[in-house]
Length: 466
Image (tube, rainbow, N blue to C red; front, side, top):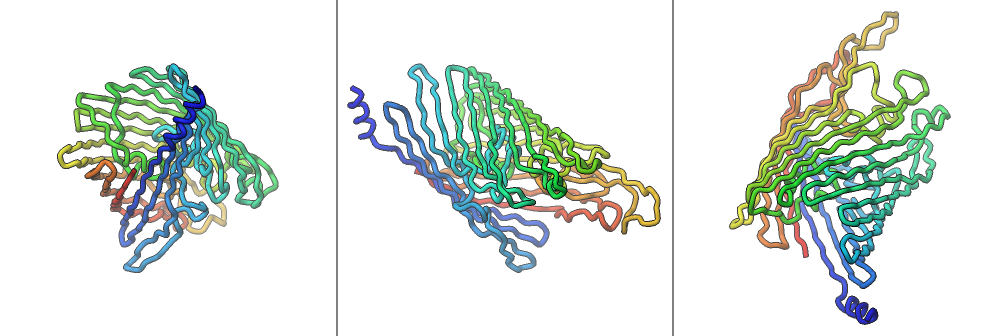
């Protein structure tokens, strides 16, 4: 009987699938136009056998030279991932799953090209646990999952051969992540925690002091859904750094014939030791935290979205690490977290196979406010003027110094998805971002980084799958 089952399974042969994405993202700010071509490929194979199911997928964004146009002159710059040998990994894996007869099962998975596994991989917590590919090269991830009834747990290990930015020497590290999940027909609660190490502190290493940098982090999410829940909005900009973004906007829309809803609350906290800005050659433990609240409702083909997010300055800058490199934020000032708010809607027109949508966003950046005073003396710094100096962190390593707390940024975006065939999708987005003027900091040494008051981003993608 067993030999017959094996023969039947092998005779059925493997099942293949694939998808291709071709498109471009065009951004404008003042007289600068940035062009980012995108070519992404995904190939999958599944083989069922009596002992279990084997799956494999190769998904990559090909490296492609991008550039910008300034005053009519083309200025090429680096490819998307100059140090990745085959491009940007978009979730390649090889796994074996052993289902249980009464439901559930266990699974082993290898992600061979994953240099950017996050410690926490919920919808939004994708900033913690990055490893820069130029320092690590390949960082494979090995994970094990177990599901039995309402319970699911996993453990993942990521060995890395990490290069130190100061000495050039490499050292071996192992990052560990574990998680648990309990679910019912309407409720899901899950938690994840991990530790991420990324070598000696470069500032202390230059003085001969070997102080390891690391991050510990944990997060939890509580979700509720009614009638299967509601999928998230089409939003390529928000998830621009998420390797799963191609999965998001290429997946088939799940339309409910009745009212459906989804509500989730996510929060996390952690800490990392960084060099103290006030105590010579010492480290301080810097806390980092975030929270995310999402609500989604559908009325047949129409969906409504609302999201509120909060993130501390240290969370946004986690594992970069520090501004400047290896330094903790100053404790001599007032820290304010970043705040985001989203409102959106979309609807599907079945006859025309179109899904138009709109999304409004307001973003208040994280800031560090310090009062600098002239303490006297006959050799003050050149250009020094007493006053308020505010460090604004718009994103990872995207900082500037201004003289007053900046007003929030506003953005409006329109999107359109057309699926003329089940195997073909065309997706387009146009986003307009308005940034209020920012007051320069006092003194010639503290000049605010130029920020364009009006920027646009247009994205157009064509996807095919089989």
